[in-house]
Length: 58
Image 1 (tube, one colour):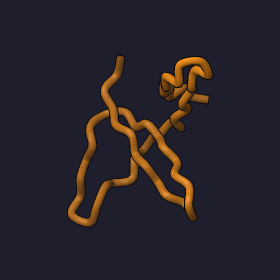
Image 2 (cartoon, one colour):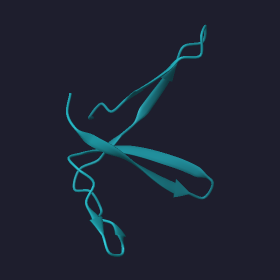
Image 3 (cartoon, one colour):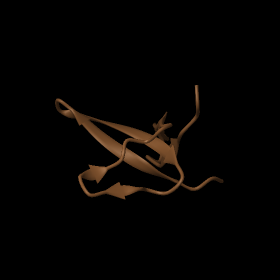
Image 4 (tube, rainbow, N blue to C red):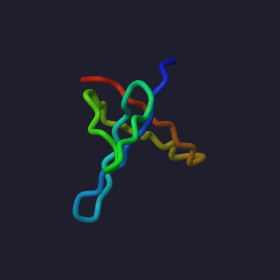
């Protein structure tokens, strides 16, 4: 496992989540733009409703 954090971005009514490696680097005007970010995909089990999130590059 690798340490990181998830950023949420809002675009006209929907939210995009991206995982970013390393530690969150706050800045006086907000959060610094990450150098590398991987989209987060969430899978749901249709039987029990359990959720699992993955950040797979590519």
